[in-house]
Length: 279
Image (tube, rainbow, N blue to C red; front, side, top):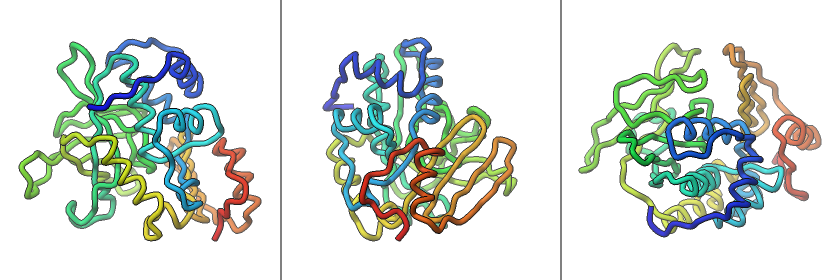
């Protein structure tokens, strides 16, 4: 990745405290898996800045202030930018990728590149890893997976695989698929090539997703928290809890105060004052 920005050792220490990581700090596959899972479980996914009409800052100091030092989370650009800074500080090589979210899409080409993922390489390890702590869906990776097509990976209880899909471009198109127990089948999550994208690219994409009135993130709250026991999702007024055994429960929220209480108690998020959560 070009235009690399380094973070201070004190910030790296604070990040690890935030996610509860007390393991090794070596640039190897084991550390990558551990930090990735700890990040997913330690910092919630949320779009409250965009819901309030503002694209969140991707400046490193602002990311640290929000995701590390406050009771807040963020969406993909924030999460994966923060993780990339931490991984680079540990000695990993990180390439930012732009992906097309294709859940529910008939054709890969019908969706724009609006998701940020990472390709991570460790010194002396010939195998690069798809790494992504910012995909706000139950089909998200919990741990990095090797960039290998046609192999099923079990990451902290979830099942994923990477496949190739035909398209009109010169670069190979990779597709991340997740196994959906309720459907008994594989479901495409997002598609990407290995073309590097840089900070200015994501500044533009972030502004579009965070401010465009047609963006789903500017229309309703979308908040996710992952633990070892459950996946909790607030999508608009619908609260969905998926337990580790696959049990799903849903209920609709109608009270603004109840939403704020849930954000505080269940998602560990302090919502900004004055923000309307239920339109």
